[in-house]
Length: 424
Image 1 (cartoon, rainbow, N blue to C red):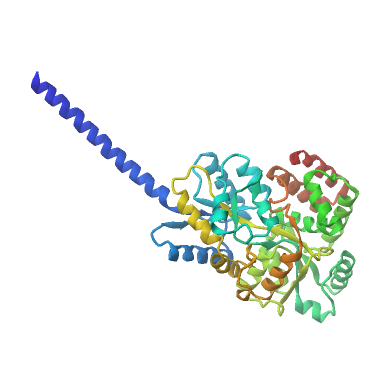
Image 2 (tube, rainbow, N blue to C red):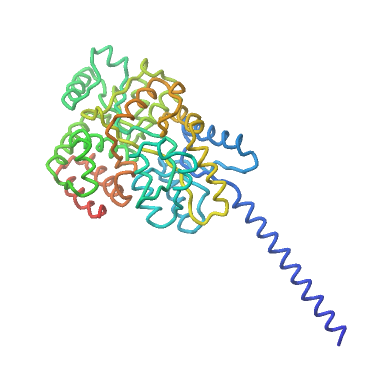
C-alpha cells in the first residue's frame, strides 16, 4: 500500500514537473515574441522606407537590448496594410505600434473601438504639449485624451510643375482657377498634356477633388462639410464639382491605368506639365527620379489655397493589451524627439511635426513648408482619412470614380449627399 502511494506520488509529481516545464517553455516563447517591437506601416517605397529605417536605426542605437522589427506591408497606398491591421486588431493581436493618420482614421476607428491607450502622461513626461501645434494635438485627441504621436506633416494641396516646360512657354504657375485654365489651354494648344493624373487607385482623384473643394469653399466652410454644417449639395460644393469636371478635361488619356508615381513621372520626364499630389511626391522626384528642387520642378499651393494647409500627419500610438507597453513608449519617445523627426523627415519628403526641429537639415521645399505650416490655416484631408470616417471616404471614392468616367455633376452631388449618412 505504501509502495503504491509512493508510486502514485511520483507519477503525479512527474506530471506536475512536465506541465511546469511545458508551461515555462510555452510562456517563454510567448514572451519572446511579445517582446519584439513590430513597427507596422505601409512605408516600403523610396524615401519613406529610408526614413523609417533611419528611425529604427536611431532607436537601436539608443536601446540596443530591445528587439525591433520593420513590419511594413507593401502595396495599395496603405490599403493592404490597413486590411492586415484590421484583422490583427479585431483578433486581439495588435502590433506593438502602427502607422495611422491623425483625425478620423485614428479616432473613429481605433480610439472609438477602445483599442488604444491614452498617452497623456507620455506627453507630459516628454514635454510635448508645447512642442506640437495645438491644432495637431487636437487631430490625435478624442474627448480630452491624446492617443498618438505625430512623426511628420505632409501637405496635400500642392501643385507640382515642370519648370522647363513653364519656362520655355513663358508661363507662370497658376494661383487661381482662372489662371489654371489659362495655362492649361496654352499648354494644350502646344500639344502638351496640362495635368497628369494617375487614378488607378481612386484616392488620387479624390485627392484632386478635395483641393478644389478647399479652393472654392475656403478653410472654414471646407471644415463645416465634415461636421454637417454645410450640406453636400450646397451650391459651393456644386461649383467645386463643375471646376473638377472642367479640370478633368486636361488630364492624360491613360490616367486610369496609372498610379500616383506614374503621374508624377510624367511631370518629372516632361511628358506633362502639372500634377496635384501631396508632398510625398517631392520625395519621389528627388529619390527616384533624381530631380533637383527648384531647378527641374517647382511647387505652389493648389489654386485658390494660398495660406491654407491641407494637413496629413502620420502618427503612431500604443494599442491596448500589450505586455511590452513600456518599450513601445520608448519607441514613441524617439519618434517624437527632435532627433527622431529630423532623422526621418528629410528622407521621407515631409516636414517635422515638432515646431523646434533643425530647419537646416531640410531642402528649400522643406524650409518653405515649415514656414508655411507655422501660419497657415490647417484643414484635414478627406482622401487620407483625417476629415471623415472610413465608410464615408469609401463611398466618396466610389462616387468620384464614376464621376471621372461619366462627368455627371447632378449624379455626383446626389452620391455625395447619399454618402453623407456616414458622417452622423
